[in-house]
Image 1 (tube, helix red, strand yellow):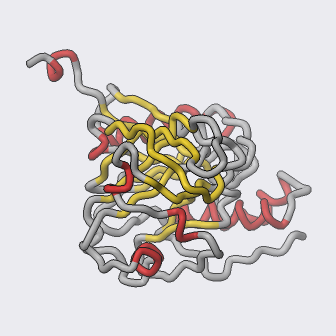
Image 2: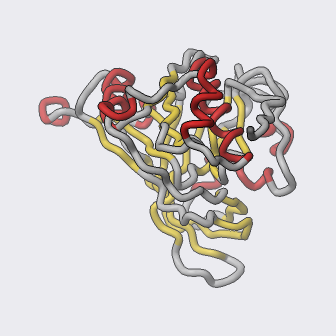
Length: 264
């Protein structure tokens, strides 16, 4: 049977991409980041049109199938059934086996710090239930990042445009987890601002990179002092905003005003 490697698993993480190898934590653990991880972060001021932004977006894996609830409800989804689950989807690679275990653990321990709510969705229907229950409305807008599957390399970019997304202070971020079928880990980050961003490469003359999604966390005062953002950006908790791009495997949901609410 494929062996599992669950060392240093942090329940207070969410995926940035690239087969879930790298994650960032708002909790009380220290996450090891590889060389170049500094370019995952930037400040909100860096999104001003015309600004130079050295950044990267991690690659994403090919999306797995999305089950309907009538099918997913008959498949065990618990760490206590990990042996049965691995057997059911056998053969699985070591990477997939680790992903299955990490996804199950995250979904069984959805308590998040700083007042965030988190839930997992294992079917199309349950994803819609999570969205409505988390945002408190059926009037929602779904945004997906326009980042390419292969990601965006660390280069010197010029910000062509950065447009704030209305109501993004109440956003729900859902991240595609590594699993044999599609499972989303969804959470409600607090005090955020979401931007739709277009970049132009300032080094290679690459064409416009359009439809990117960047989130800026407005208040980092209660983040762990060991968070990589503070180390890489040489700032202290609460001193500035912390921003990053979403990779391809995320769906960001925001409430939209009703016709009555939108009428002055």
